[in-house]
Length: 462
Ligand SMILES: *Cc1c(COP(=O)(O)O)cnc(C)c1O
Image (cartoon, rainbow, N blue to C red; front, side):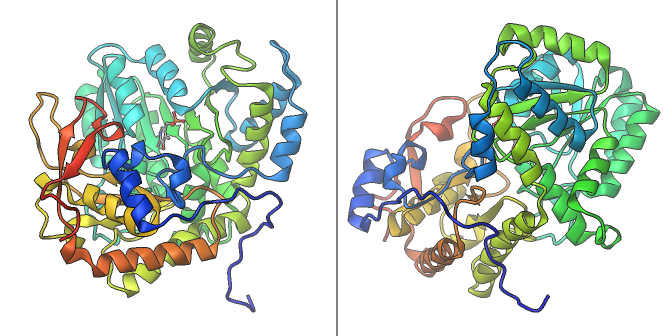
């Protein structure tokens, strides 16, 4: 390549204004929101990095597809378009649309899991874990040990511990109805899984005759990270790598709000006819008729196009590079982050940035508040507010105190990323002034969404 600059591989046809606010306005807004960024009005946020789920920008081809949506109750043409697109990429025989990823999980686990069963996964995403447990199963995380170390530079930190998997199957094989693999490994920081690791897991599952399913939410980002971090795949297309990944499994669950580049949707796909019959029977009960499954015809069209656009290599290059670019700027300025950078988000390490704030005063939460007040940036705490409460009600600090900057797809440009870097570097420079926070009131489960918080020492900044 003659030129170094990586450009956004699109031009902008429709714009959505974002609103500048002053730090004083934001101080009032966050107080009104009980010091919880989830309770802010989106119009008071300048750069919204709360999640990459359902927040992407659709292309002209997706919008054009939506105009063609066939809203027939049964046998809609849009279903055929959707089914073909999913089959071309995954190769799975049966394609079942759902309204989002967790609906696919709910249907799969309620069709497969009996009380007392064990479902191994590299790391369960929170809705995946909740749905396994709701079906009476035990959600077993088997990450490699490098996966849980913020500082490890392993290129495939998302991998599953295959020895631990084999041991589980050897000991409890009759209680394991399915093995899952999450790509990329969201709960471990969007870290990729290697193709080699998927091959090994697939081989073990075949040997023990256990179905192997992929939680495919970020399959395209994972394929790109495989291509760029595994020299043996450098000359393959992201598409062919993704196809091989799916060929090693018996089925998948998918949230189209991620690498489907859609604002809503998901699916379940598999090769087994008898299992598909069971799943469709449940689908009719909870989602809808099998050719729309909880979605409008136009949603099916948008996803059909989005799945293919997510595999476009100019797009993937820009996508992964934007996050690396931000990470490199922050590392250069000495900001502590999780490395290597993952696929969809960058994680600030609040334990290292704010060593003076004890974990019982939620350093990552405090950091999320300061990022908002100083720069209008909204990002999610992944720390002890989210994970620090035991089922018996006692507190146990989380392993890591992180703030996740998750990037919506095709939404922000390089100048937005430059602005984010400037704000984070500024906040890092005032780290010693940042004080801890306390919980005022919070529900017992998923408390981060609605908790009311307050500065632990009167003010957020010393
Ligand atoms: C988002 C996500 C899900 C759930 O999908 P929804 O569309 O939010 O219901 C499941 N697994 C992983 C890894 C995810 O990132």
